[in-house]
Length: 136
Length: 136
Length: 136
Length: 136
Image (tube, rainbow over all chains, first blue to last red; front, side, top):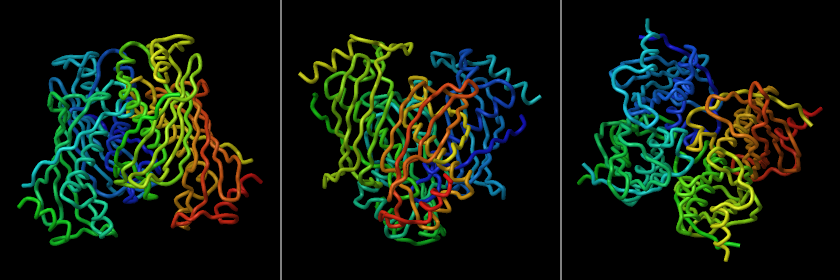
């Protein structure tokens, strides 16, 4: 559907564990940064959507760890929209190491559309409409 | 295959995010605690296995977030062994809230058997043999 | 002033970094767990205080790292109340390794009393009164 | 002594807690990023120093939290060298929000010079010499 938006960051010391590579939970932080920058790239921050009362809690996550990332590695997170349903949307992510473009990880997160009280928004809502326009 | 091993912990303030619930990456920390306690319950810590030169890096993770966990919630992580292949093993996890046993999340992680240098161990190795005995 | 409240926990794999020891920021999580369990030990959880509209954001932190903690170490966090001023209170923490009681770290955090909107509460407030009774 | 090196980053969703602001332990991650970028700015990465056998474990940390940082805030970490002793060195950090330069936090970390086995290096060592040249 949508374009793929890249965002580059550097691995922190605190992201590693005693195996000398990045701890596996930290990839989910990077996926989140990818989603944040995806929205920013299209002109409306996720913080703004929350201020308007639409939230995107994660309901499912998946990650394949292909090659370990290490301290001071520069990596790029590529994010795009995947499947969208009536009440959920998927963000797809892949991570490459710079400058050799080695694939580091790939995965996706599925998010429900919910209101301020956590009630699922089925069918239409402003954030869902906005995401639909990104693929056009 | 194996029995399911429970471990109970309490949600920390720092585990939450501005949505007022536990940030999604923290569930992978809990899955890790579940695996650690699983090994301990069967009498040999994962630290010991690393000392003997067998490592279990995560190669894939999956999580379904069913109901949000909140600060000071007491939760139990139930862990068991899933599918084992020649060079990998799956740990399956589910998380319940105490005392109402509300399902909070479920998921799994797949791990490669590797040696100290990160080389994949195919076929037999002491840790793989040990895991096999747990289901008998 | 108050008694020292102990809480024991086990170091997670994800708490370590590539130096093979616990990453220094994680000690501040342990201090937080110590504060949470301190309040619980005296019969009123910090979550309850927030529900009543008194918050304790950290305004200063200090930690001395004496001996590294490692994966699977069992550690005890000892927490007590330190200096209390008109609009702030100090929690003092020290961490020992079990069972040899090796000193791992010590430090303190200073917290402002603030209301739901972040406004500093000077002078009297219910949480401040409650803390004062703990030392009696 | 040395110049102050700036590094700008954006606050992640996962850095916040249920108070709606950045959790206090995350500032220590930012101090670490500041130190890493400080070394990089002077042409030799900390990873290289570790490869040569000199390590800088944190032995003390201090932070004053002046104004809360929030999700999607852009912040700049300014890092410089502070007091250097025979076997330790201090990094000083301050954090400002962009673009209004609001002071967010300030603090410092003290680090021992140690070798690969964790033995303290007193007196001369290559990393200590290198740091001394930065102030000239």
